[in-house]
Image 1 (cartoon, rainbow, N blue to C red):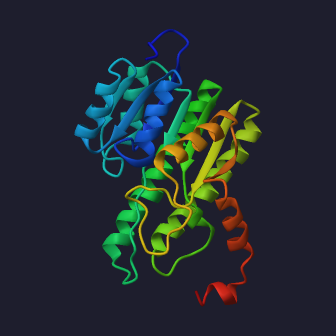
Image 2: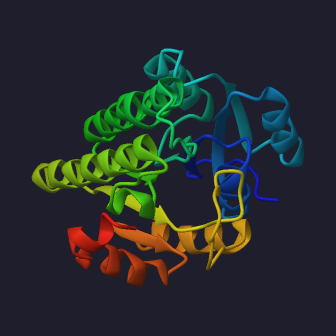
Length: 244
């Protein structure tokens, strides 16, 4: 296993207790990163840390309830720096009945907490003079959805917010990178509903995400073929889409 040393890259993953976030944590450590991992379930974070006690640091908190800026600052100090932050925390449920509690909890995490975390990160990188922000949005952000209105809308918000941050990064003329990862179906608890296709394993998805991070891509689709779906969705006339 890689050992902590001066010059080792430092990363934080928000939402590392399961799914894509957990797999990304493992692959980053294998690529010689010191990684701060966050999430609500301390037991799952501790399991990850047990696999590499030297290169994992834990911060257990709920980013919809805690002071994210304070928690992130403490974690950055513990790992002694920050080169890469990956926001992999998100939620969404099918909600054809428009239960407000579902819509509200989706927006609290995917919009409010998302905004606080990525804004803090961008400001940190701007002050530092460099850095890489990566957020896991979704192919769902391309169009609205009758069965998951808040989820698709919140992902559209994320896509547009990240685009705004890329514009800001360009204006700074600093080496600050903002990557928007838009997965299709990945074999995690987030994959809900019938009619799923092109379902990627977590291992395949994270391998592709790591490649996108290394290349500092602005936007990436996982798996790659979902780029075709995004083009089709964008070009589909409203009259047809509204009948789906």
